[in-house]
Image (cartoon, rainbow, N blue to C red; front, side, top):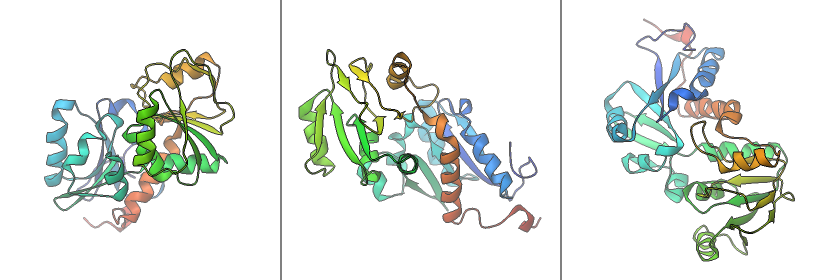
Length: 265
């Protein structure tokens, strides 16, 4: 699925989805359907980029015809050092998942966590169990100020340092480690941004369990949800919400000002 005429012209706004296995995700096709439905001469192209080629690919975007890119999870940290300008969310968390080219400058922002928080709000979630203390957990906390969050990790000292770093006052911190039996069923949602290899210590999950993992990423939460016959949602399960947010982001940035019918050749 491409633009309204299923073709690229010299007017077409080009965007990339950069990831090691970008072609296996449906995000590009889903977004291209939105471009077509809204009569926009724009297209997103999946770009399968190996780690060795990532730096070269992003730096050369400054002088290319690519107007921006979505960044897959595996490169969300790597791209930050290549940005000329970063949003407050990117500076706070140290990760970036969307880049726009402004002439020969790269401007980065963080969109996925915003979408995830809106997704949870729309489903009436208030109490959230957050697993992990890394950059993605920090990014979630930046956007999740309206939720009542309980924090879980296997090392309490590092967890305490994490909640202090993000400025969470009177935080509810909890240990989650092998050999324990933890019941998370009282939470409206479980969000896993941990580095755990297994979640076997969880005895019960919530009715809504998410980790934003893409198809090729191993998901301990998905494994445990299957074992417990609980629901699980990853990156591909919220594509409609993500695509709409990306479309609106491009539009608000002035990238989609002209309809295809307005173009002059």
